[in-house]
Length: 565
Ligand code: GLN
Image 1 (cartoon, protein in one colour):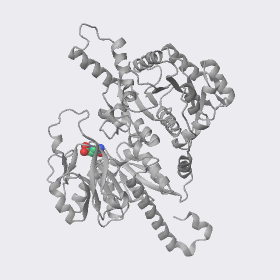
Image 2: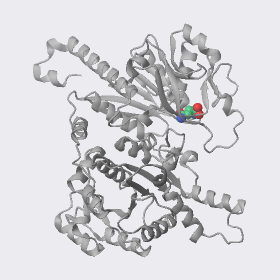
Image 3: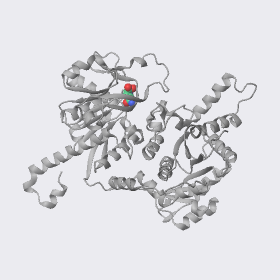
Image 4: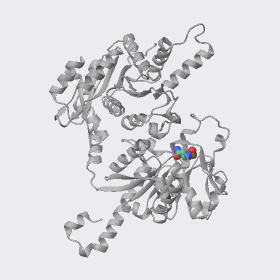
């Protein structure tokens, strides 16, 4: 395989169990190497046969992360962007489905004419070819590849075989394997146990791969003895056994790995000489604000249909961490299952007690729509800061149509094709679309912002670019009627055709957007809409507390006052 000179490969694999944090490990290592002056990119390889996760339910796969160039990808790419402050692209996420598709397409074109197409060598060669794609096209020093799944899965074997062959071809100074394993703490024995790690490495050895560095996830820090034991049985130098114990926030992981000198071990093994001392003061300050915000805690309600599985809202959750730090508060989220509000006995006032802002989440399909409309109505009528994203924005316009404009059966044609007031309708370009995969309005599009709007107040610019993932849009037939009743169309596509942002004139903070701002919030660049929403919620919380204090002050002692509200 043609390999551009000097690009070093790091492969991150996982053992024992899933959900150990391979994505966070890859993102943290990438961030540390970048902080030392290296040019880094991260990519994710997923073993499933779907061409991309766009066709999977959020219950199966969590959030679908959309890149600027419109790829529907794995949520780990969100971590890469948030930590590294670099945009990913279609080339950053490869699935086994995409590999097979490409091999089968080539076979049909006759590119293997005369041959029997097999996993070895054709599928493996295809993977190796793709493994170098980002390295060939970018100006990089290091390319980190995270391999999805857990060692022992049948599905990921071709990826591992490709990695093994690549190492042989390009040499051990140019490729290393970091294996993330689990070292459980057994309470009854008061001991950390290394056996699962030993077994996982054994399984990796069966594929012909000797890990170069072991990162051990554990509840408690690893002692020198445990590191020595792991190293001894897994054939790894003790110094190359790195501890990754639980942290209060994922953003502390790079700081922990810096202490463990993971970046230095990697650089030594890959003969990466060029480096500077990383300046992580900004990052440390950020972590400090996340852990100990000066202005206490506020509660924000998140209403959606996948709330039992918060990974479905990963980027939204992380955006609130960023926006909380920017406003010096901890944002604690109260999750609401939208359809619960459809029960006539459900008490919205009670559910939203103490909530200083409400976010209605993106989604597809009609489950929970009526509940979302109820939640939005409550926030609008009670002047509670409101933020709607994609479907959340569409529901906000349905609610406004029904309860302010008197269009009683207003709806989106996604849910009711026969509504007399189809305020949300299929986009023109979508009408002829038959296939489901990768056919929505996807990726980054420009939006023009109107002055004198909440949107302008937060963005402070007239032209923005945001990422999209939807098929339906606001129906322009209803713009005039909505404007007359106080809705402001504060953001549109440059030609004015597509509504991108709506807000309410007579409301404390009611902003809803057709795009997905959560996909662009980063530690270094907190998204202005999240930051603005949290600011409004914080002011609302302080306002109500003050109100409570004013009324109750005569009866409170000074110590009681600290906890009032
Ligand atoms: N289901 C809506 C649409 O396709 C909203 C999509 C979303 O929230 N991402 O337009």
